[in-house]
Every structure is written in structure tokens, then in C-alpha cells.
Length: 259
Image (cartoon, rainbow, N blue to C red; front, top):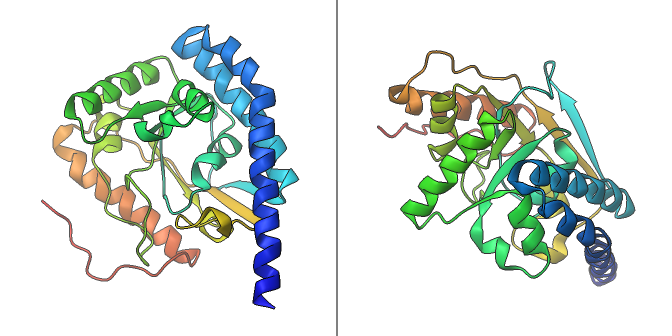
């Protein structure tokens, strides 16, 4: 019985991957055209094209992103979005989750994938975490984008959470940018992405819901660089508590703050 289920899952995954590429290739000429309009206007247009891709792909593969908001959400206001990261599907969910101008920060390695890498480079801000100069340049770009009234997005864990805990430790980048630009933080939870497709196997994909929960914004008014660590742990604790409430992982016991 398990062999039969596994066979149909492979067929489903192949179907999903073929559709992924087919829709991407249909929309790719529009991405090329949009890329001539610069980082801001062109980037906004490319992210909207990615939203069209997501709105087509997900229903056709029977995965259903469902957004909900714990408080009112102003799509015209720039935020620093921070999201938990457990699934290979997380990046694909971004254009389905955010119906506003936003620029994610993403790993530069992904930009080397043919065709998809071109779209990736134009829709997000890439970073090479092993290069301090490149990291600093990426942060400068993000700050300039926020200055244009566009939200930015971080996976503050930096990579996939492979533990049984709700979250891995956070990097400081998102919280430093929030303080330096005085931009509020808005945590977002991806609740079902790991069940739809985990990070170890591309053939683990399966249909079902993907809940996306927007939490209340966290203001940073009046904070300075000395408050970065406190802000990071405040956001961590809020997201950890909410993930535990939604029964995504067990709450950590005795996690200590590094000073």
C-alpha cells in the first residue's frame, strides 16, 4: 500500500514541477520586459508577475494558501516582515502571501539556477552570508528600498529550521535594519508549508492547505542600536509562543539569550 501511495506522490510531484516550469516560461518574457524599468518600478512589476504565477500554480496543484490577520493590516505601509523557515515551499509562498510591494532577502546561491535565477535576482535582494562586504551592501540596498516605501522581508533564522523546536536562533540583520530605518516589524507565520513539502526531499510535496498568519506589528519607535538584541528576542518570543499555540513544534525549554 505504501508503495502505491509513494508512486502517486511521485506522479503528483512531477506534475507540479512541470507546471511550475511551464507557467514560469510563459511569464518569463514579461519578466525580461519589466527588468528594463529598474530596481524599484521593475522590481515591483516582477513581484506582481510572480504573484500571477503563484495564483495560477497553487490551485492547479491543489495547494491552497490561506491568509489571516490577527489585527488590521495596512498594505500601503512599509514593514520589516520576518517569517519562520522550515520548508522548500516557503519561497514559492511569498508572492501568494504578500499582496503589496515587498523585497525579500535571499541567498545568492539560488540566483545561479537557469531562468528561475534571473527572476529570483530581479524580484529579491540577494546576499552572500559568507562575505561581509556583500552583506553590508545588501543591507544598504534594503534600506534604500524601505526609503521608497517598500517593505522588506527576512527569514531571520537564516536557513531551514531542522530542529523539533518552533524556531532556530535569529540573526540580527532584520532587527538592526528595523531600528536604523525606524520601520515596524511584522511577524508572519507559515504554518503548514513543512507538511506540504519539507526541506529534505523535493518529492515530499503533497496537496492541502497552507495557512499564513500575519501577527500584530511591533513598533521600534525610539529604539537605538543598543536595543537590537532585546528587540530580536522580543520578536523571537512572540513568534515562538504563537507557533506553539498553533502546535507547530514544541516550545523550547530553557533557551538562553546570548549576550
